[in-house]
Image (cartoon, rainbow, N blue to C red):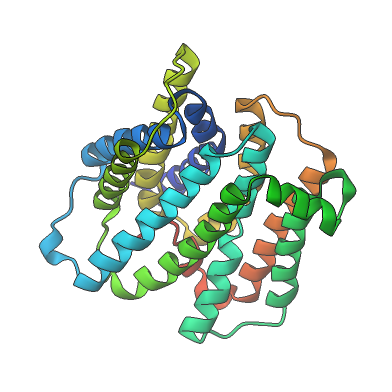
Amino acid sequence: MSPKKATLTGLIAILLWSAIVGLIKSVSEGFGPVGGAALIYSCSAVLLLFTVGFPSLRTFPRSYLIAGSVLFVCYELCLSLSLGFTHNSRQAIEVGMVNYLWPSMTIILAVIVNRLKTSLFIIPGVILAIAGICRVLGGEHGFSLTEITRNVMDNPLSYGLAFSGAVIWSVYCVVTKKIARGSNGITLFFILTALTLWIKFLWSPQPPFVLSAQVWISLALAAMAMGFGYAAWNVGILHGNVTVLAAASYFIPIISSVLAAFILDSHLTISFWQGTAMVSLGSLVCWWSTRNVVTKKLALKVSD
């Protein structure tokens, strides 16, 4: 595959991932938070078996097999359940935005762990990203601590899971890069995530399914977005322009919000878009501060 086609394939992966927030919430409304997530990851795992294949576990470093599995499964649980347990569409989009703190966190952790050189621009970048989240959670009240606290306390589980997921994914990106040694356990990780969700589904009481044509369509689209997104990203990272893909990935919060608003038929205010732009810009500033050292590392999302 030519570099241009590979880069385009990687950009398609970004578009697919951007639809995840809206699709997961849509599926959870029909199958429940846990059941919906279990079905999505099960279907995605099947797609990955056909597109990526099942890896030879004997070639995997043991540290990557254990740490990678635990971190990946924990992240996907946090992501899917944080969206599934939201009370409404607007809250799902806000929770998804909290999860998008992971790019800035990944850069900070990469700088600390790998002792990378960076400029002081990383500080305003981080502040801008955090301020963007505060702007989103503050709504029309701006940077109101009272309003932000009220929003978070309305559903601390979802917001807490989303923030935990952002931390876990940043750790996954940095740690697995050091220990994977070229191994790609994405298919295994998806299977483990699906199994974990099914165990939880069977272990605890679940709401009844509310099925409709829209729910089934959302399930199919979510599974394809997950499965094909990861497969397409690997092609882009291996054969495309990594710099372009790394920069483009930081616009996922904006694209994701647009698609989620369309899928969930939710109206988003100007303050929300301002906060979203601040999150993306903050991540880009962080990337710019370390661009000469970690261009490839910033494209880590599932390249391992």
